[in-house]
Length: 551
Image 1 (tube, rainbow, N blue to C red):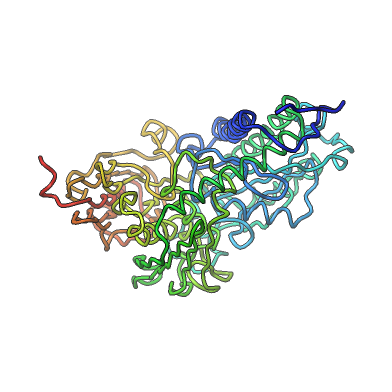
Image 2: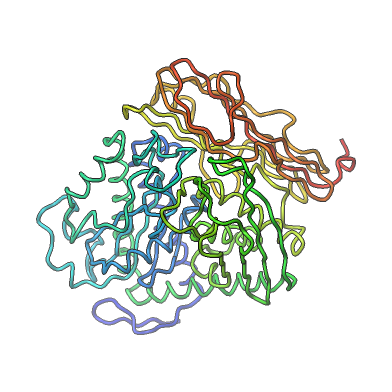
């Protein structure tokens, strides 16, 4: 294609050739990846800089995801709701919004999202016309057109609430879980709002760390505007904006072809959560997955009503889990963007576990309920695509939070376990499964940053289900606290095993132990110095008849 340009460098051709499209696609994904690297390098908390419990993405002006970094599935699939919430607030160039409210674009309160409208100058270098901390903001901002949004989402180690770390096991309403922020201007017209930042930091523990992590998120979003301006300068403004549409259309067409290759029909599955933190009664999740040509519909009618405890999950979280499964069952090389989501619809009854009404407690829904939604949808689709669906993995994030009530430290970690065996190979040992994609906290970092000591960290031999292909092994991690502290555990698969398939055996259940005594899957307890907390994570299920293993 021959592209003509005017004196501003813009093109007057709305088409785009395949080579330019591929170059742009990689460059746009590079913008999202560079945002993530900026956030990780700039953060202070080990939860972000070491575990990388954060995600970044680039959206167009209509709120469609253009590109994402390969970070946390439960963050990314739910991000469009955050952008939609900000777009309703009449954003202006130079603004930066912060939010975490699960009922207005968030997931759970510790996941703080920053959304910046992008309006790089036509001839500019993409930098703001004044630093966000500069009181000499530029009056020309309002004259620039918003062409997209930069989004960063990071799990902050504390956002207030009833327990250090803001991951209480027994919360019954969202107000107990931390500071709740609807979309709020942290930066207005390029000027930092000190009143908003002060209000936020006054309601969290260790505000120094929170301040630094928020600044790292802001820097990540600023990097997006700079890099987007570079692309405008390189290709021309309209070619890049045409590229937004083209990459989305390209992904949509490829996903639709993959879905069409699956057999039409309705497929059903159910599974349960092991209590909601208030009672130990099982909580059912039911899904009906309908494939009709190039489309997939997932209906969660039959799922339990919202619960008194904190396993309720906003609908955006349920959607995120479904999108993850569809991504897994289709070609993983398809560029991840809005086009991958267009052929997929997700619904749940209002007032149910997967679409709760406020002020429902939700902190466990993002981390644990999302995992079970993933299991249920995978199970439903196993009949349609048996060669692509593994046995069940550990099905939990094994959330461990340890902190001091005086705010001197808060440690948060999700602990890996067994990945389910696949139709053609063993499951992976000691990895994050499903809706999380974090690293572990290195022992050296953990013991340097916190008054904690790692007593044991090892694979659990024999925890993977036997089969022609063995399920992955779980982990055992023992941490001794060296000061009085509050411990919160939000875990699953302590009672119901991860299931094997095609004759494979189930994986082992997990176990939580404090000073040698087993404790429930959902627990918050104050402990004295010298206490050892041990988390034994589940193994993955096996795949196929164990007698066919050939060992």
